Length: 392
Image (cartoon, rainbow, N blue to C red; front, side, top):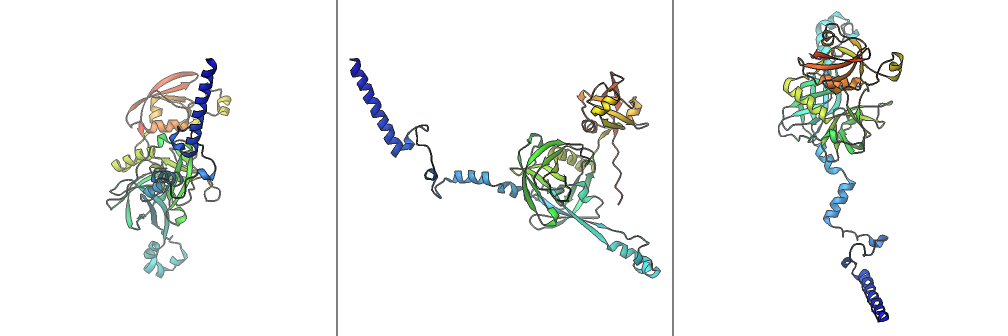
């Protein structure tokens, strides 16, 4: 009896395996995925033109950033600036009294210098973002749109300490760029840089985010740069750094270079900073920041060892402006700032940004370490003075 049952079971298994073999050979799609024949070699590839439209769109999205580039380039403009160069009175051409009498003032107005950069349209009614250094001291500003139109631009305001400026074009219905979230950007994300390098015309380059939060580079007073290896060259300043969907992540502002060309290290001001500065400039024409009147210095291991400092984080006060907010509050040289309103201060960069966000006139609690013990000092925040205009 047991033998008959075993023979019946063996025959059933044999028939089942035969059926599976036949289906796998002639109708593999009827079988579950794990039982179907594996794709092997060129014979498993779809014939030319046999892929579905969805597959084609997916493959195109993987292989191209054309849609992102198209959206971004429509919002990026070329910026041309002109500055009148006045000729000194002792110029040889003006040494003759007759020439000075008849041509002096006119000649002094004839020589002009031009420069170029890039800008980004951020509102349909004509607001354009660019770098402060692109339009600094310009007598005339002109924008060339991606559709070929030219328009005069008016400076709304600028902020030298973040190197940002806002322009206005007297045009309506412009293609404004969509802002992305720079705070959620990650190292390794694909980015595109759009601008007008070397004046050759609008250009798109691709790379990745190489680093975030770069500071203490000596480029701006307030630094929080996105670093990228997307090629950025002279003329890209003020242009857009966008994500793979064409959304604005930053304004390209500087490169590290020994030759004047791209070495794969470029810096962009993140869109979070850009929006804060832009909103203040549009509202009041300038940016207002908090200020206490001190000269801070980072605590290096060497400094901590030499002066036997009790800690290596924070910012040491190397100088106090006489009569300034910190001086009136009792801050002394050698104090180590460790917190402002409960927010920890780990470096001078953090200190500058934290104080800048305080409202002038407000009273903030500053925690210092003095002679090994912590003290709290209330400081009435002042208004940060605008940096002096660079001489030409």
